[in-house]
Length: 159
Image (tube, rainbow, N blue to C red; front, side):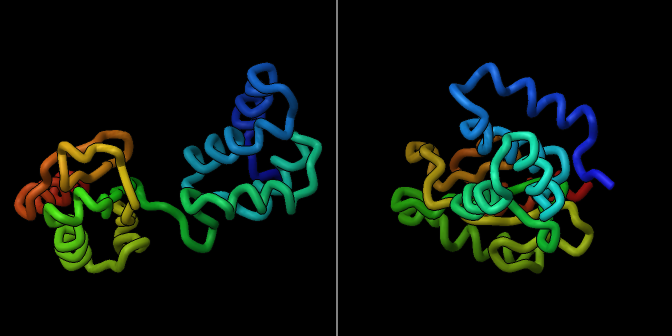
């Protein structure tokens, strides 16, 4: 039984011409799989390795080097929320904001809510120092986040 759909395999193969060799497609392939499945399973690693003509350990090494990817034992929720902990955000309440959101969601950093809707994580820097403290929600960055804004954001994501 295969883990990757024909469409997902085709999207990975479509990346080949964009890179100097198949090995260079490892990270884009992991992102494609992770975005679609919300995790990267051992089976997916094996299938990516086969497509890229690599040993599965090479794909696994790339995946585990980055803290972005989740395994099937710890998949992402529907929404991924990152709270920035850079020096700028820290000085403007980023750590307190993270603690507040953890309390409201009943999770620790890296955890996913029981309903599977929100995974809350911290980022070392989101690069939006002028909007500190900031939160990245999926692909959207929210600036100058207060506790009240965070609660509203949580309510919207849970709806």
